[in-house]
Structure formats: structure tokens, C-alpha cells
Amino acid sequence: MVGPDTVSTPEQLAQALNEMILNSGKTMDRVASAAGLAPNTVRAAARGTSFPQEGTLHELVRICGGDKAAWTRAWHRANNARPKAERGSAADDPLVEVLNRVVLLEEKLEDALRRVAELDKQVVVLSRDLDASIQVAKSDAEDDRRRREREGRELLNSVPVRFVYGHPDFNRNYYVEAVDRYVAEVKKLAIADIEQLKTFLLTTPSDFPRIGRMGYNPTEVDDYIAQLKAAVFTP
Image 1 (cartoon, rainbow, N blue to C red):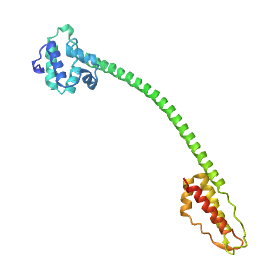
Image 2 (spheres, rainbow, N blue to C red; image 1 turned 30 degrees about the vertical axis):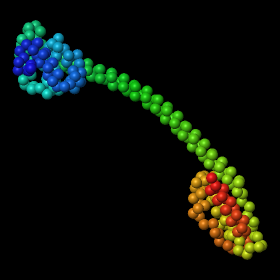
Image 3 (cartoon, rainbow, N blue to C red; image 1 turned 90 degrees about the vertical axis):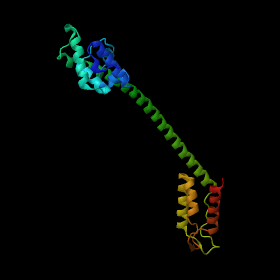
Image 4 (cartoon, rainbow, N blue to C red; image 1 turned 90 degrees about the horizontal axis):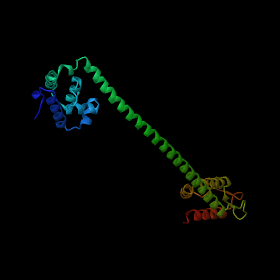
């Protein structure tokens, strides 16, 4: 096993870095993304095709869980083993590191912009589909309302109101205003919703007050209510 303590040359540093990344259980791309580095930078360091900057090494060690002090000593030994002409100055490290991060951020920004554009397209499609669904729902609701109104009117026409007023054979006719209120509610509910009309017919008393000869003929009113219930509750 190659570790930082065995490193003394650039080749050994690359081999040790490659083994550290493999042992971390992460792919090089995942390590690069977590470290904020370009994937090519990490691959070049692990393959030995490019000597890593010290800041780059520190980020890799941080992500892979290595000993920073040991790896720093290894980096300096390997750097000292390089020809002087190839050694980078410490002043170059921050600039290269920043440039690497800028390249990575630009790639991520381009990817984010592409995703935003795709999301914008999806939003347009979803909005169009939603508008179409709303229009269909409105049309269906309007059709349902018209159907219920039509059924209500057909029901009312099938059971017309024909009350005899002031029938002389009864001295206790139904109170006119009470019957008229009942019939008005029947007409309103028949147009609005027959199910509500059923509830009304089942729960509202139809034994109206009696006032004498000047009211509605009870027989006519009772017959109307009986016909109405038959029409409403007959399947």
C-alpha cells in the first residue's frame, strides 16, 4: 500500500493520490465535484501527467479523509524532487487554484442554465395543459348545470301546480302563504339540484295551517305533493 509517508518523487505522489481516491470509495468525478475542482485536474494529478498545486492536494485530502500534515510533507518532498525549472512558486498556487474553480463554476453555471431552460419549457407545457384542463372542467360544470336545470324544469312541468282556491266544500282550507312558500322552495330546488329537493321533501312538513274557506283546497295540495314525491323518487 502506498501512503504519503512513502512518497519522495512526483511519480510516487501520483500513485499515492490515485490509491487514496480509490480507497475513498468515490469516483474521481465525485471527488472533483466535492472538492470544487475540474475533473481533468484530479485525473491529471492521480495519473502523474500534471503535478498538482499544493492547494489542489489539500482539497483532495480533505474530501478523501487523509492526513493533511502527512500529505503536505509528501507534496514538498515530491516537489523538491522535480527539476527546478518545473517547480512552481508558492505565489502561483492561489491563481491556478482560483482558475480551476472558475472553470468548474462556469461548467456548473452552464449546466444550471440548461436545466432552467428545460424547466421553463416544462412550465409552459404544464401551464397550457392546466389551462386546457380548467376550460374542460368549466365546460363540464356548465353542461352539468344546464342538465340539472333541464331535469328540474321537466320535473316541474310533469307535475303542474293547479290549486283550487276558496273551495266551498271545505271550511278549513290550507293557508295560502304557507303553501306558496313551500311551492316556491320546490321550484328553486328543482332548478338548482334535485338531490337537495329530495332532502327538502323528506324533511319539511307538508301539513299546512288551515284557515277556513278562503285558502287552498287541501285535496288539491296533497295530491300535488304526492305526485311531486312520486316523480322525484321514482327511479
